Amino acid sequence: MFNKLREQTSQFLITAIISLVIIGFMFTGYQSFQATPDTVAEVAGEKITYSEYRSALDRQIQYFSTQFGGKPLTNQQIEQFQLKQRTIDGLISQKLLKVLAEELKTPVSKQQIVKTIKDIPAFKNGEQFDVNRYKQLLAANRLTPPDFEDSVSSGLISDSVRSILTITSISKDLVDKVLKVKKNSKELDIVKINKNALKRKIVVSNKEIQSWLNEEANLKKVMEKFNQDKSFKYDKKEQLKARHILLTTTKDNDEAMLKKINEIKKSATTKNFTQLANKHTMDPSNQGKKGGSLNWFSRGRMVPEFENAAFSLKPGQISEPVKTSYGYHLIYVEDRKAAKLAKLDDHKNDIAKEFIQDSSDEKVEQLLESTKKDVMSLLDKNDSKKISALTKKNNAVKYSPAQRLNLYEKNSQLSSLTTTEVKDLFNSNTGSVKNFSTAIQETLVLVKGLKSDEKVTFETVQSELENSFLRRNTEVVLEKLREIYPPKVMTNRM
Image (cartoon, rainbow, N blue to C red; front, side, top):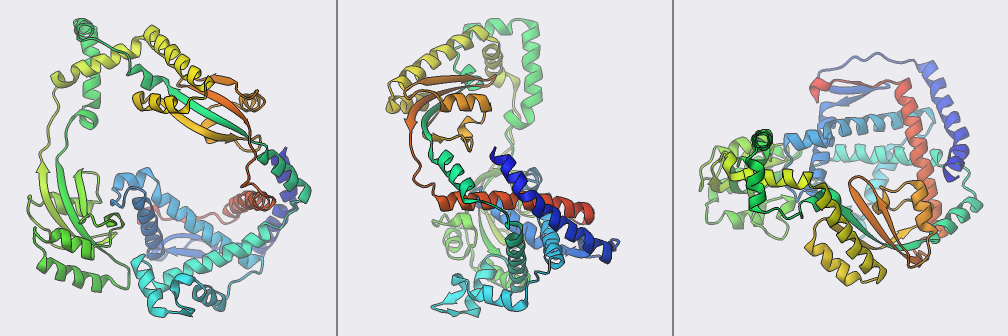
């Protein structure tokens, strides 16, 4: 019901905006793509330079790096998270929003950009804008003033377009209806049993393993599995234990950071490296004064420049300054573990055990039923302490207490349930325990009764609906803009 309302109330707005853009397109025409050597992409006559792309990509890499404790991302991780594509897509969307703002006559002036920057509290010393503080904070975040001003401009453009895209009819009656549904929540305790993890709990004796391996066909299965998984699961790669000092760089401070890292190198020894790292490193993961420690890592974990330098060192050596996309590093290798190739005899029993567990359908079913019975009994008694204790002993069981469920939005812990199952669960009596089964897991739920969510207010629901309209309208408009102004991307320059 609410999705239909959203579609109907925003349809006229989107149609009108797209019509304006198409009219502008008819008069201005589409310019063919003529890339200059430093151009990575172009859309609607707006070029994305390599430096613009690289700066945005570095920020993406830095953000994702912080999610992994500040460790530098590998090329494999950059590909895995599709950071290059995310970056270019984001920049293209920014350019298209800029074009849209121009077509809708909502330009951003230089005065607006300056005022916005001067009003940011982080750049103030007391009540006054501090230009030195501004530059220092930007440098610490690997940004230059022009880069930051461009991002502020993009933000202001997005805000101006947002004010147009959110002009829609969100009535008080609609907000009240959604508010009523969202506040009318049921509290649930949810327990999930992973069937694959449960298989690993089946007890298999050494006698069973040897008997199973005595059959030639089974031994062949084990050998094939071992060879298939050997390189990434069983072989031990060469590893280093290292520390580093990182000085992050921008286009403006590269020369100064190189000079500083060389000065640090002159005084660095194996005895004082930890103290120097705590004093100088700009690595976010060194918070708490970890002495620049990277612990143990193997090849493929760090960016190539860092990795090549580190693996060329012997234990006890400190590198010359190494430049990566993060900045300048000094690397101190503390220890090294040689690579070790796995042998079938060391792993065949464990592999055989997994084959036996995977084929023990009857035992799995018995163990599943036994585990379900224990969990359902504890849920029925509302014994959260014993359920928590059970999850600590059995990693196949996950417990999520005090979850909320309403009929407006789906709880992520119930993502495996169908819409009908969610409705049936919501309408279940207080105190009832429900069981939902899929091929990979069992979901057991204790319905604890109605519980009004005090955090849900008229204002929060209104804001949520406006944001929902905005996201949908923006997606539709950007999709149409991409059709009108097809982006051209030089993938070989990314």
